[in-house]
Length: 304
Ligand SMILES: [Fe+2]
Image 1 (cartoon, helix red, strand yellow):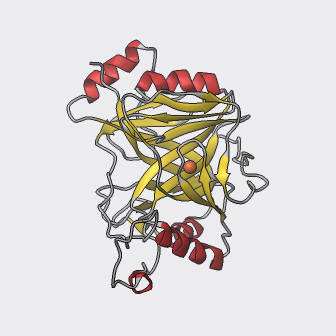
Image 2: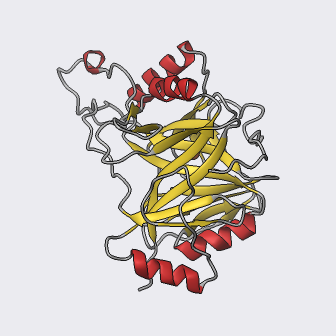
């Protein structure tokens, strides 16, 4: 079997102020990574950095990092070279092992031997719903989390300039289509599990649409949301998506992208059949905010 990527490990972006990024990501609930070269964040308990922030004049998505299974990197490199991908030296400002190359929009892609952090098994307070009454003599309010601590990086959605070209390219790395809506939006997965771990939104130029982080339960999601609201990042949600079915709340980051807490995303197997739907839908929740799919990322190239 040809080697394929196994999921999304991390993304890097440039930001005009590392101080501002530090406050924003801490407020969201991610933890700074000790010893990071610039500024790095990860979920509580994660084995490796999941976001790297680099300082530059403009905020831009800088790179996306994917895993391949142990012992398969060389073979993976040969396979994608045979498909026309040109392997390059790592950009000067990043220090990451593995292969480096660029996607059709010029975005740097890193592939290394690792697996996406699976997150931890988290204690949650059982809910007396659906006719079942599992919680007896336990006062739920006494077991609320103090704040949101994302458990794992769920997915990353990119703006791309040519959806079909990006789909072809990332399918070549081993991603499989989960579902799409016309020529606007498509969701992808690398392994059975979450309905989507990666995806694209058609735009005029590349950018980061959003990253999405799983939290333990609805209480943690809403407790996280309250803190974000209090700190000046009012969210969109609570809602439930159509494709993926995840319950979500999104917050604008300080630079025009979004960041999401989610719970309860659809799990899919090898048997999943992708479909093309007319339009993205929200099953319930407030109306999508203005500017949710406006790519405000700078088109100015930043050399990494
Ligand atoms: Fe999402």
